[in-house]
Length: 267
Length: 310
Ligand SMILES: Nc1ncnc2c1ncn2[C@@H]1O[C@H](COP(=O)(O)OP(=O)(O)OP(=O)(O)O)[C@@H](O)[C@H]1O
Ligand SMILES: [Mg+2]
Image (tube, rainbow over all chains, first blue to last red; front, side, top):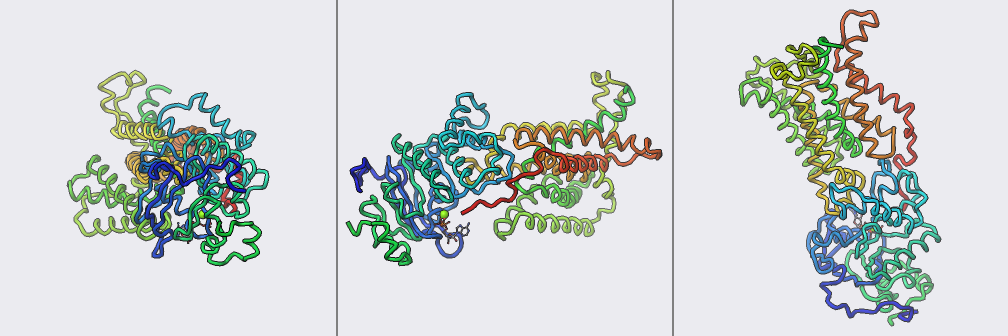
């Protein structure tokens, strides 16, 4: 189940510095102990990459630090070879259960339109074309019927899809998704993966924090294993191995569990 | 409604309405950011500002006092932010610490220096003197076109009008930033919106509006207008755009109803004296909030406080 089904292969990335996202020596600390320590990573173009690691491994922290949402103690981040400030138009981010004010007076379609901000700026009015685009993004995640609902009046899975629609509206080249499948039902997961595959087919790069080890092989091309430090990185075929997972989860995964994943053993 | 109205009621009404709107506009965002108490905080820190301005200039004229008050408000905002960051405590507590210490500091300076000449009138500070802001030279509506009469308008009117205009313009210009950053700060950061500077700017704008309004109408209205019209407006709609319009309408309504009731209400009830317009305006805004709580179409908000799963 490897490269036949049209997956892109690497590591023949033209130049690492032009990769959608490269991280070098990034260390982040909230207190005394670093949450992410001296991490190097490079995520390839036109591919879906998974960031995998146990709870508290620093996955969300790595994404946020890459985006400059939280300060890093050290390290560099490049997006398509540029510092983040120059590449903001090319990135969309879907946080892990967005820390928004659910009681805010805003509707679903309004939230999606917020994704258009980089295109319209502070003062320009939203054109009819842009409004239509926002609705189309909502439709792509199957939430068009909820356009006029207040944002808090949705289920968790529906809220997740709205934030995905907002990211779609940004029309970015690099999508950073923090657990897009958390708490969504099987049908919704399918719907979301279809949307993501469409983006990949359109040449976009996707980086997603992912917990469900059983679907990694099916959904992703590339994995990055982290537990505060970088454990392993590479194409699913070579990096998503029992040894690497044991190292990532500190031996907390039972052998039988790993067998169920039908992992490549040191291929 | 003729000459008497223009002379005695027009300017206080206008000042009341403008002050109410200048406070209610930033109040919308402060409430959504759970910072509504900042109005209260500012009303306390104004005291040391005024005292220090007096010590430095030796006069009690309006401009140095206003600058002192605004300066103190900005210092307070910076201190609140610093206490919040360094002490890692929640915003409400940081505000409490800062405004009580600054107020106490103001009282101390007042006692330590020879300020017996200054008459810092508690009732004035609380209630303002809206009723006294009359337009002596006005003889009727035509005075609005008479430069000589216009020159005698109470100073508070142009002052609050300018501040109100600034608040309106800032709200319009930074609308999108304010909306996105208030709803989802993390997303705003990813978009490159300078969220810290924006939050600071919002509070400073609120502080300036508060100080300009204190001067004219006293702190009671200011504190009420930061909270009541926006809170009532939130219960009327699920759209921030509409909420802003509702809050402006409620602020205006409170100012007009409050002023009219203060002047005529007691007479209708058989009493002989009018009551404080400032108190009545604050009361009117409270009643509007109460009615919105009872009858507002969006008072049953399903998402309230709901923590997302996972
Ligand atoms: N705001 C914060 N303040 C202090 N510590 C934090 C903060 N956010 C995260 N941490 C700590 O940093 C570490 C990494 O957290 P992070 O959220 O990046 O983990 P994660 O890998 O995304 O976990 P999960 O799978 O549960 O989402 C954890 O130990 C966490 O307790
Ligand atoms: Mg996380």
